[in-house]
Image (cartoon, rainbow, N blue to C red):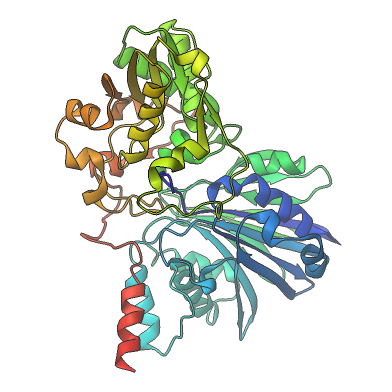
Length: 479
């Protein structure tokens, strides 16, 4: 609706040493992870080997009413998932967790990320008679695990072998009849962390903010390539695929994660403030006020103001009560969509030279409309500063930036031309070098392929967003 970036999803898992209302814990955790996906969600509960699950389109409180949570009942394990689709579209069979019943037991899986070799994996299974119900990468991961499990003594050994065949981004939580297993790809593209509640339950989450909701203690990040196995005998780690410090998606700090999360030892909020401070050093300008575009631009704006000495102010009020179905604007209505979401505090803007901070510019259309709101409010000058470099290349690891033809930085060859297109007096982007310095307390590596075109692993030359949809349509025409 607003041409923003989206990240694929968030995952959660909990293991208790007793039977209790684990679905309620998963519900609260997914509420905290809602920012990572607002399209659909689901929870699966393990009650002594019996799996119950519920999934649906919509936000967490809409999908899980009190009666739905009661229906999931009690258990000692649960996993949950919130989803925004970057591959696979809105097929109901793509909603996670996926629950698989195979010859050696039950398995449920929740996955965050994208595989670059999912089409090849899928084809291998289909040629052997495999039947896929959805179009997401997650189903290929589930098939791979179950296939290996047939000859392995346990699920963690199967996962260990599967990781040799998976290429791309995957932070996963798997639930079996007796274990909760979390594993992360060797590059660590997407975050995954481990925590513990006051009563001894182990929890796994995409972000630490979910632990705070449960009153749990953050223990540590799960390492890139690590498999963490949680059972009645405690927690153990398998590190055969741990190759180094990894390549975390730098946009976790810039945009995706919640400000109160800690990723790889660094506060997300502090990282965004550092981004703003770097912007002030790299792109100074005389102005009267610094404002941020809610929400992820606010901390960067505060950092810019502190570094530059220019006063920080509130420029926009965000409407917090717009549901996803509130408006589906037609082409003629889109110019009004930003007015519904944002309102300018005119008293702070009129007659002033304004520095507006946002996390990114994707296509530029929404940005131009926001700038227009400031002009209408009487801004004397509008200078835009962006807390990320220009997007010039597709992302293959779970972010829906997948087509150069729609990226404004690919349509115009200079920053000045982009500034003219969106209607600002000046424009400055954060340098790629600065993005690698955002995490002040971490030595993790970063993936910046969407800015540089240089990826940590080999990627396809072309990968359409709904890469399986065309294939399925083709098969239907053969019938």
